[in-house]
Amino acid sequence: MEREYYIDGMSDRAGKTNKRTKTGSKLKGRKTTRSKGRKSKQSFIKTLSKTDKLNLALAAAAIVAIVVAAFFVRNAYFYITGNDVTDENQYPVKGVDVSSYQLEIDWPGLEDEGYKFAFIKATEGSSHVDDRFEYNWKHANRTDMRVGAYHFLSFDTDGGEQADNFISTVKKKRGMLPPAVDVEFYGDYTENHPSVEKVTEILDSFLEKIEDKYGMKPIIYTNAYVYKHYISGRYDDYPIWISSDSIPETLSDGRSWTFCQYTFYGKSENIADGEKYVDINVFNGSSWELRNYKSK
Image 1 (cartoon, rainbow, N blue to C red):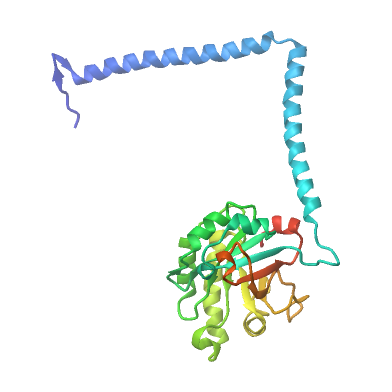
Image 2: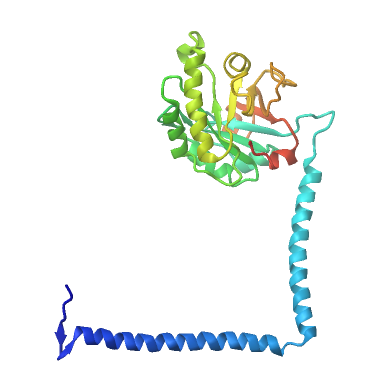
């Protein structure tokens, strides 16, 4: 129900009417100002000679050409310097994977050593978050290294819940490497291996949720035994990060690997002042290919 309130003999309705009238006048004034502005611009353009117009068009075209040229020159530089695979050095692109075990890490120092990528432990199971993840993720991403995060898969909790733990910890970031999941035996499972059905059920749920969230197929990290008995023939469209004492040409089934962890005993003065070992990895490609790498 509409009500009227009287103030000094004038109804509130009348006041509103007066306000609308004043507002209308203001709007007309604004329209007039805008109209004058547009006419002024149009008048300025009309006063330009054909030569002036041509010069403006040429200047605009030159700016666009400079920007495009800079882009191509930059990419050409990275392409030339990034094609570093040779017969003598087939795997020149090295990286590390780290967790809280490595304690303090000087990320710019690692980059200066020539490391091009890093995988950082983020989560484990459905609730654990690595103590050093936030620090490592923040500082590694301040370098020009390609950086990714990984999850240690538990065989005791639901894969979807584990994916939720990872997703709540690792925010999607432009240029990040695809998320990785570490599938290996631990604890009692080193002697009493879980069934293929159990691992597949947990891993399927995890992979599906992660791929849906990040828009990239996750990378599966594993060793030769687990790959042969649990991964091969079941996850052939996923990139493989294989752990091996030596760098193999292919996986046991003839597939190509994407990353290879070839030693647990790397050392660097930029990691815990050289007092902790670190895993060293290679990428199966050139620096240019790593720069543009994104799993499908």
